[in-house]
Each structure stands twice: as structure tokens, then as C-alpha cells.
Amino acid sequence: MKKPVKVAITGAAGQIAYSLIFRVASGSMLGPDQPVILQLLDIPDAMEKLKGTVMEIEDCAFPLVAGIVSTADPMEAFDGTDYALLVGARPRGPGMERKDLLSANAAIFSVQGKALSEKASRDVRVLVVGNPANTNALIAASNAKKLDPRQFTAMVRLDHNRALSQLAAKTGAATTDIEKMIVWGNHSSTQYPDISHCTVKGKPAKSLVDQAWIEKEFIPTVQQRGAAIIKARGLSSAASAASAAVDHMRDWALGTNGKWVSMAVPSDGSYGIKPGVVYGYPCVCKNGQYEIVQGLDIDAFSRARMDATDAELREERAAIEDLLK
Ligand SMILES: NC(=O)C1=CN([C@@H]2O[C@H](COP(=O)(O)OP(=O)(O)OC[C@H]3O[C@@H](n4cnc5c(N)ncnc54)[C@H](O)[C@@H]3O)[C@@H](O)[C@H]2O)C=CC1
Ligand SMILES: O=C([O-])CC(=O)C(=O)O
Image: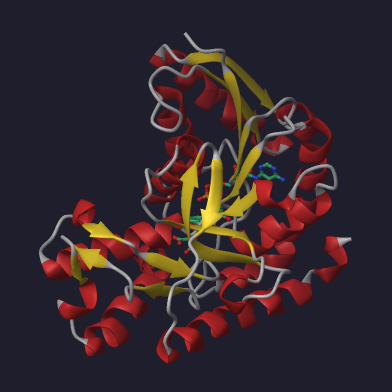
């Protein structure tokens, strides 16, 4: 049996965590031979509810769970953490854009970035799920002075998975038949799901669908999927968000075998996106590291959309600049 690793999950009494914790505990994220110590963080008012979740984890008698910490103190929650899933934040309700959550949630991520910097493993991998996820990841990374910003990522994997599922349904293929999907930019309604490089069973996706479908159906459906779910459920996506978080961390930790996945990572100038934002890119992961896929041709249609979502991220950045010191 391997030595246990520490997995911190914030917002542990919330609805995404109610799905996520059990997937992590069962081995879906780090593999069926990797024991985990769960470090569960929520706010003081949620401790009673969290106690109930902990009782249920215990009642699953998961063979891989080597310990459970539940706390309202980030310094305790992130002590020695190898993988941090930052989920805890207020979700949006009907009629709101994710950036409307900016001031409500920004402070959480500066505190947690500092705590990770002090207490986490020097190799910690951080995934921010709480919205607005890209800018919250930027805040956390900027406040974690003792860690490399590349250790901080944000989740566009749910958008990536939504895009796979829409294209699969349209072409009568399985999601596993599709390669080279990309979601560029912000996890928001300006994101750009891009099938320019996609193949379906080895054929270019663009030869199987028409441009009108891409522009009028595919892109808006993926961009607006979160809002459609809030409208239908009265609550934001939870099980699918948890599933995407498992996918993101698993691929980062265990590798993608050359396959592309979308991850929001600190921009490094690739594809003309200047440093200073956390931007969704096509990535491949190997040996616990991600690399941005390089050398893709970008046409004018894509360029305009990639720049629009970049511009929105820089607006979000400007609104919280004082938290980036
Ligand atoms: N990036 C993505 O693709 C997605 C992101 N989200 C976002 O994930 C976040 C969580 O969503 P839900 O679980 O549905 O919300 P929820 O309201 O059910 O749970 C959030 C939990 O976070 C806790 N929390 C608040 N402040 C905290 C702090 N400072 N430290 C630790 N915990 C704290 C709350 O007490 C609550 O238990 C929201 O921001 C939501 O918008 C949701 C779906 C997809
Ligand atoms: O839409 C929301 O607010 C929740 C979320 O991020 C998503 O479902 O993509």
C-alpha cells in the first residue's frame, strides 16, 4: 500500500463537496491504490452540517480513507496538503453572472492562498472551483508567495466535458471518440469552446458539422450551460462540477497519455495572452506537470473570441487588483 496523501477540500459542507468527497474517498481521483487523508474545511456556521457529512464518510467504510480532519481553520486544513480543491464560496443564483460573485468571494481566496503558502506541501497542486474560478485562482496564487504560481489552476474542465457531450450528441459519436477539444479563457459566458482542432473518430469535427451549428448552437449552449442548470434545478451544477474536478486533478496528477484537456493556468504569453490572468488552455499532463499545447494555428474567428474572454479576465483582475499584492 502507498503512503497516504493529504487532500484538502474547502466548502466541505456544501453541495459540490457532498459529491466530490465521496469520489475522492473511493479512489476515483488518485487511483484505487492511493490512500487519502481528507482535510475538510468550512466556516464555523457550517460545522454541524459538516459533522453529518463526516459521519456519512465514516459509514462508507472506505478502504482508502486513512484519516479525516474537519475544521474551520485554513491553517489546520492545509497542513501538509498535497492536493487542494478550493470549492468553498458562495454560488450564484438565477439572473447573476459569475463575476457578480467577485467581491463576495475574493477575500476567501487571499486568506486561503496565504495559508497554503505557509502550511501546504511544497509540491501542492491547487484547483480552484469556487467562482469566479479563474480570478479566485489568480488571487490565491498571488497571495501564496512561497509557492510557484504554476501550482494554482482553475476549473474549465466542466466546460470541456460539456463541449464533448454536445459534440458527441450532434455527431452520434461517443465522448471517447473525440480528441483535441479546447476551452479557451474564462469559466464564464465569454469562454470559447473551440472545435477547430477537434477530431471525431479521427475525422476533423468541422467536416461533420456546419458553421451555423457551431456559432448558433454549440458555443452558446456550452457558454450558458451553468445558467440553464440553475434555471432547471434552482441550484447550480454540483455532481457534474465534482466530476470535472476529479477529472482535472486525476489528469494533472496521473497524466493524460498525450491527450489534450482544458485547464485554466497562469497565462505565460502563449497564444498572445499576456501574463497576468489565469486562462483556459489546451494542456497535456505528464509526470505530475502540465504543459500548454503549443503551435496551433488560430484563425480570425477564434482570435476574436480568445481576445474577448481575455479582456473579461483583465476587467475582473482590475476589480480585485488590491488583493494581488
Ligand atoms: N468552476 C466551475 O466549473 C464551477 C464552480 N462552481 C462554484 O463552486 C462554488 C461552490 O458551489 P456549491 O458547492 O454548489 O455551493 P454551496 O453553497 O452548496 O457550498 C459552498 C460551501 O462553501 C462554504 N464556504 C463559504 N465560505 C467559505 C470559506 N471561507 N472557507 C471554507 N468554506 C467556505 C459554505 O459554508 C458552503 O458550505 C460556488 O462558487 C459555485 O459557483 C459551481 C459549479 C461549477
Ligand atoms: O453556473 C454557475 O454559476 C455554476 C458553474 O460555474 C457552472 O455550472 O458552470
